Image (tube, helix red, strand yellow):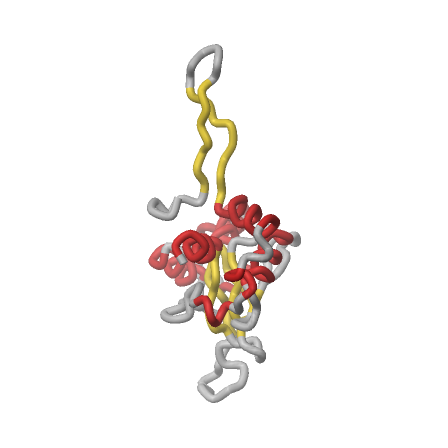
Amino acid sequence: MIESSARRIPLIDEDEKTHREIVVSVLTQYRILKFVSMNCKETKILLQPLKELNIGTTSSLSSVKMSTPVMEAISVLISKSISSVPIVEEDFGDSNSQDSNKLINVFEAVDVLSLIKGGLYTDLTLSVGEALMKRSDDFEGVYTCTLDDNLCYILETIRKSRLHRLFIVDDNGKLIGVVTLSDILKYILFG
């Protein structure tokens, strides 16, 4: 799963009557981490804060603004091979602004599908902010954690909310990084 960057792997068995291979289930990163979260709570590494574990991406992190054209956001998703890109506050030229790089939302690959379903695929010059206004009402929001949160808390949040990532923010809500299921799985398996 890690070597191929696959998010799902079919579990194959042989049908007793026909002797043909059949898919009996699908193993996902989420299911593996859910198992760890529910059954390994006392494991020492799960009690350590994120800052001590060196998990996730905190450098060369891509982000967009609400005014960024959707086509540019799609380009970031494709070029970085990611499924979402964080949206940060507009800085209005003031690099010392407290709001500079403050996480406000996320643009996901599924948002592109919503645009296509809505017939807006011919006009991808609209902004990310305009695209988010077309987003489904069932969007649950952006999930965050801090570097002080431990892996047990993060896994529990992932399990309860069926997430694929949490954005790491500081006490002021400024974007620091992102931690994904793949990051956690690699750490648990290979430390």
